[in-house]
Image 1 (cartoon, helix red, strand yellow):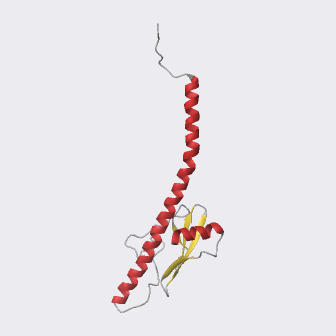
Image 2 (cartoon, one colour):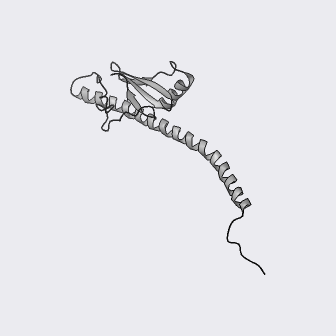
Image 3 (tube, one colour):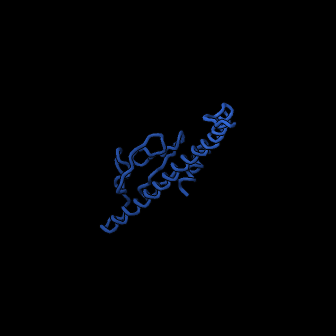
Length: 145
């Protein structure tokens, strides 16, 4: 006579927990890297939008007879509000932007901060690829290429 089981044995449960632990150990670092990649992609898109906004603002000024670049990119609470239709809200140290001065902005990715400088004479918005640490220089290259 054959009886049917209605529960898992302890060995089966331990085996499943070990497999889940191995999968978690492999998956968690991949998810952390994906999150950083998403912040880099967001920063890259922001930089392209900011640069396009600077050019669009200058073209509008040239149409009105003023060939100068805008002196300010926006206020403290809504960054880049003068050149973007949807300004960027400051996000301190979590993968976002903050404003340090009228021409200096910081982009944060984790503990790494990059300084971006707006030059209102020639309309450039760049970070330095040689002034910071190795991780800052690499991040700057990743954001601006």
